[in-house]
Length: 327
View (cartoon, rainbow, N blue to C red):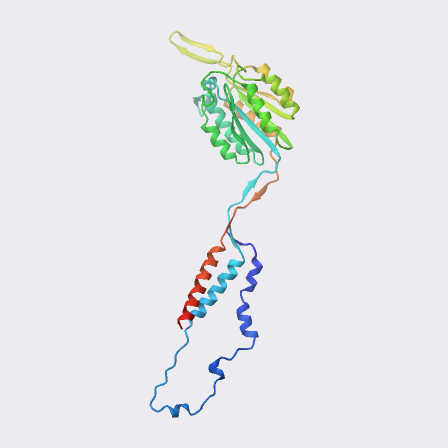
């Protein structure tokens, strides 16, 4: 919609008409000249030429005045309102991209998918619900990388999460949980905020990195960083082979003891996700543990439009001046 920033300037629109009505008219040379009543008798047989004054310059002047007043009122185009974050919470997601996340032991719409795909689907809905929070994304395998710094732009976080793939961080089948926590501590303790939260999702144990998970958790606790850990992976899985069907535990490498200790040291909780439904339920519980700010603030982007009527008004005034010079 169009909005006038200084709408009171529009009160100046009738000023030329008021000046014309209230001020006494100025006599021109023709009105002040000596009138000769018998002039027609002096011009024998001469045809009197009467030139009718042009009206279009007056209408151009009126239009130019209207456009100048409109430009002075500073017209602006207001876009759709955008929600602004005011909760003061920083929330970082750390997602494991090691090779074991390629294990297809999750079901999504009756279709078997790997752990990473299930994580993307559930985490996407969770991120969209975090209105008012600054959200960031860390991806880790052998090394930990900051994929998205803290931002209110949740759609960007979702896009880059969905574009991630196994092996993007490295080519080795290793997991650096401690480094991921350490990177989160570094990124989440730079500014004063009401709450700092890390949600760490993995399906294995710490097998790489420069710092142990417990030591990293102690650093996080000293910086008032709360960590929620999620262990993903089914407890059992049927494998068909030439020799028949057998049960295996695809989550035998999951270090639940360490993940529980990390959460306990920082005042968080450890969750176990054996299927897509449990994973979705965990993120719903996290919404309850870290509620979204209910009060919302909106910002409407503005685009200035005053230069359009101003340019047309200047063009019209130029046409009037050229006409006066020619006559």
